[in-house]
Image (cartoon, rainbow, N blue to C red):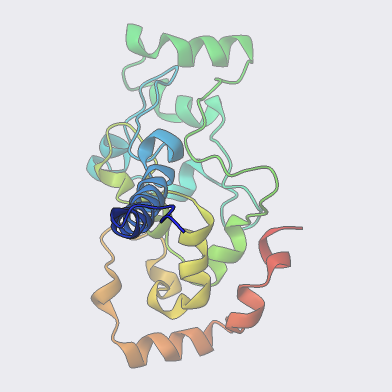
Length: 219
């Protein structure tokens, strides 16, 4: 009986299988990198705001505490946005006639809130509470980065599930003493491993199993 396939077909089949495996691997790697890119996550992208408020000036230069503007960050799920009255506490005296701040004066005059462009926006199916993170030793800069060095705020981290889970699996790597929560200069290396484990116990942080349970963030 005549041979149906040429002898070279075996080599072609082997090469095809290897090529398919390589292409699948490259495709999978490309997908994971693209899914983490700033194009999809919005990471490092500065958004245009109605007023170009500089955290670098207000926090870094003037030393204004986060809680002066974000007054509910320790008590509620949301950090809260400052009312125009908060802005005018200073700017009724400082730069009071600056054209640059006319949107702020107009908001105060017309009693209409400034419509800020949201920078950190989690999906609606994700539950996040600022107050519990602050209470358990998670500092502002852990999630938001060095806000005191940002002329325009951008998203420092991906905010993807894998990023959240990394902290929930080992919170002792990211927590800090409560007195340092709003310290933008704090570094993770400021505590050694033993101090971190003790701090985790002192803050009564729950088990990894409960912290990584689906219902913790998806309710």
